[in-house]
Length: 456
Image 1: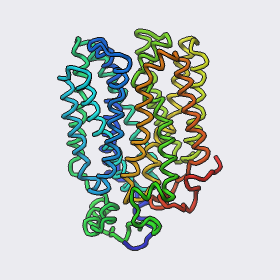
Image 2: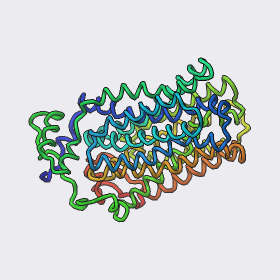
Image 3: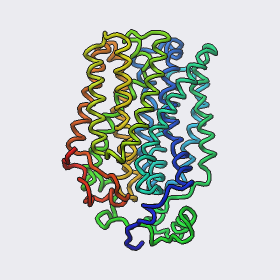
Image 4: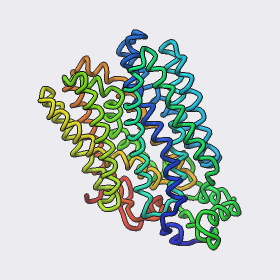
């Protein structure tokens, strides 16, 4: 590749190809939200039928998160080595098989294993799909399109609650149909993804310039050549995964892993055990179901609002303010757990809307801050690291509600948000308006690198 500003690609208009790629890539987050949320509804039948203890209930609730930890790391390494396109459908086929197999699960151990495998497949899709989307998308649309993947997470979650409520009414085997139902959207997504081209940035990085140029011409037009593809900065030559941890990229990895962990522990706990938390807040029966549905919609609204802010407001201010004000809502829930139901629902709704900023940046930051040769590995490693805390938090929620009460549990969630706010003030970078290779540089031209403080 020759040195080039890459403006023809970074400033290209949003094409039909980009829109289709964004839609197909969103299938993974949709399935993630679906499988992690449907278990919350299914657990109302599984727990009494299998006589689950709080510990066993927590393990099954956290099983997919544990799988995501392993799958995201492995998927990142594999996609950097073998390419994005080759693994783009294989991981979803595994979800189909294991989802169907859940229908015949007869004991907690098998259910745990199957959901662990589903989590691994879901986790593998994170670095595969997001790296592919980031490497094709023009700079102006990169933040909104990557952040839009998180919106689909909440669409999947909302769909899961709707399907779950319907299937609860078919009898004692309703939970089996709930868990197996993930195979249907997974099959649709696999069929849509067939024929997706490989990332030209990855191909060029591997020396396969002829193939890279063929993809460029197919996507951008016959007059586009390999010379229009921006060259990765010299400071990142021969970077591997170990170099991420011992070079300047180590600071970026530390920040991304920390902020990601702090943003999803409270959220996943609410999604896995939302009905139980609302019941502890004295919202029972139909009111609890309405509250759960409302909170799901508010999470979705929050992400959509954040999509409009990510370019206008900037990445750094968005993540800081999102942590601060959503944490305040959790703090008030912890201090006033006996407040009227309307106040409780309002505070949960505020948390759900405001936390949207941190949620969409989970996909934007990791894909912008690392070079092509290790982008998948970096996204996978950050995702895996964040899932350690998320799995532990989800596992501990039933016991926290029993031992600390709902007030103490909400205070703990507020404390986690506070940690996210502090590290963001100290380390959050600004990558708004940068080309992908500029954002991944250790010395960005127009913003503060990760690991150094900048003004809000």
